Length: 366
Image (cartoon, rainbow, N blue to C red; front, side, top):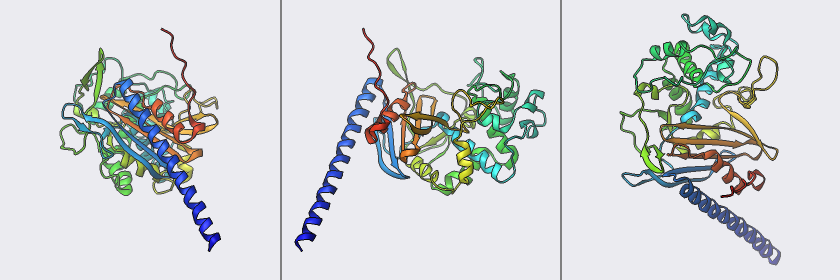
């Protein structure tokens, strides 16, 4: 009995120590987030920390709507920006697994009236930003409503910037084209395909395509700073908020379900996921200059592998970082343009796993 009491006492002491350590980390996270929000003038922020597919922390900070003084909650919806590209890439890989799309198919196979240059552009090249496509041109009018066919015509009118496969250049136009390709192959608007094949099966009940017109509970407002003063986001035409380069609403609660699914084969075979998380090669066999796979970036911090992506659109900035060796995922969603949530994400990861703490930045002298 005495030995049993000692054992129970030791276990109890250990549990108390673990709880105390967790509380210390939690307090440190709170202090850091609040300090960064104040320094960067971020109105609202949602933080997700998950270990091995399970939520450790899902916390809202600040205001999702400054004018109405509505606080951020775990249920608050933020715009994805380019974080949405990972869902587009997943949808394409689903079609690849089904034999409906080939990674090395020229995209002209799916667009009969495409420019001749598109015969050299493959699906693989669009997924990895190595196809010669570009970002939207400077004179592109984001306030002009266009049908999907009109968006495609506008993309076709932009010449390739370089021979496909010879370099890397981030290309929103490439991912917008992939969304239209999904529609051509499946007969379904790519957003409906995502709902049926990804969001609904995973129980991501609030993730959806952006709509300014619909009544959407828990939707955050986006902001920007103009000469240090907070302003509302700039508006764009409704159809320009439905393209596959990053036009989603999601919450950290839904992203926790997404993260958990990536440990499994619910959506894709492990081999397909690993292909998405492998740096794509150029024609010369060398990895692309930005360590991009299919819808994901690859990074390392002190020898620890990171798979992630950031996003920025209409007064929102976002980041997901999956520290795969540590089975740790950190997501930061903010409603401020230029907030650099990736820096916050990596620091928070370092509070949970000290080896992940990024090097301290040197202070600038006055």
